[in-house]
Image (cartoon, rainbow, N blue to C red; front, side, top):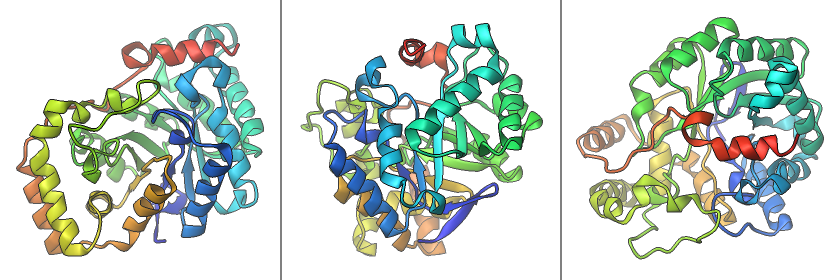
Length: 341
């Protein structure tokens, strides 16, 4: 698979989000199936795998670290061949008692044990905790880099001012945010800043929780428990209908390129910006390999220009946005993390 850079980290141009094996898409697969899926992705050429300490069924405290443990088992035989990313939350009470650096290092060392490794390539703050200055987080991450415990660091779902403040203290390796054909707010300020300052951009939900695959219809029923698709804006019934012209456009290019809708969506993203690496997630082995196969779908300059222009002319219905924090949307995660202490 072709590669690109997240600052100084070289990764496959399409990575793999591993969350779905533990959370977010209803009933999770058997552990053996999930481990095999990760290993098949590596065999295909994927060298970039993303997880987080909090990923577990229902984000429940008793399942804290579930995904990291699974990923650790899957990658142990090829750990040094890949770039491994994980994320932490900063619990308010813990950091107020022990300080930001001590808290971050404690969480990192716990992730080491679950991941069966002694370093992490890319360590993100999963969401900003407004109780603590991002500059303090940046200083702590710089110390971890100097100690050789992490190779780079990042932030997720942040506005431009937070990005600028953090990068001024310890240069960021990557920003991770929601980005797809129907979630493009990061194109206004975030991605341009990243391009100008050698910061990589990692796109989660690049197929909009499956919407852009064209496989979800108004009759699709999602599981009632632990399925984020029940809350995805583009998957509301009225928005599935209203956004049909976008699917029609993608389908036209998919037919012409002998590709799937999902592959066209990813090929568009990879073509548009040289520093963007999508990390589509799925709990289905077939979908995972299909997504990675987008690396073999190349849009010509003319095809991309036509697709991008046509896409920009279409109105998008439903929007989540790229600015989230503990105080805005992840209080339940704070409770889950605090319950571990």
